[in-house]
Length: 64
Image (cartoon, rainbow, N blue to C red):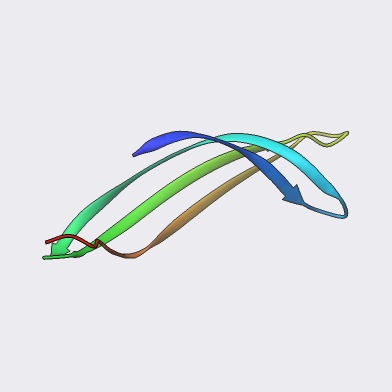
């Protein structure tokens, strides 16, 4: 999976950000996957800020 993102970051005030993300999932059993997602955000402040985040955990899929 992968894509682009845009939104608001909450600091002392709300500040806009843009970024990209990518990740993958691995099927563990029937409807249960394990996922890893990496994201990069560029936050528009007077002195620019960058944010890198990594998320991982179980992912339950609703399907037959």
